[in-house]
Amino acid sequence: LQWLRNPGPQHEKRTLFGDMVCFLFITPLATISGWLCLRGAVDHLHFSSRLEAVGLIALTVALFTIYLFWTLVSFRYHCRLYNEWRRTNQRVILLIPKPAAVASAQQSLLGLQPVKRNSKETIV
Image (cartoon, rainbow, N blue to C red; front, side, top):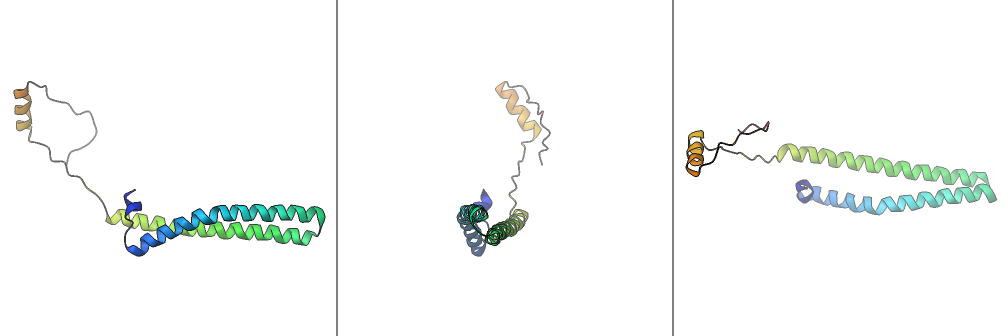
């Protein structure tokens, strides 16, 4: 989510936003166009020439091939940008524990029992 809010330089923000808008616009457009082409191909097979039906089927295959190619290229590009962003924008939280003597003294003053840690985390 942090990467989506701030993916990096301004041109990367525009590219990400533009690709998201194109994806949201082109996906239904490609689906409807493919459906119409296949519907036309079926009609041409029943009522007229097979050559027009084959042409419409070829157009549908070309349409979806180009759509899938564009989607794959865009996805791989943004994955590469995300991995580069993740490599250079790491957020590290450093937890510094209180010394054991101070913690024990505070717990004994409050009448608390020492807390055992069952987790596998290592405090650095």
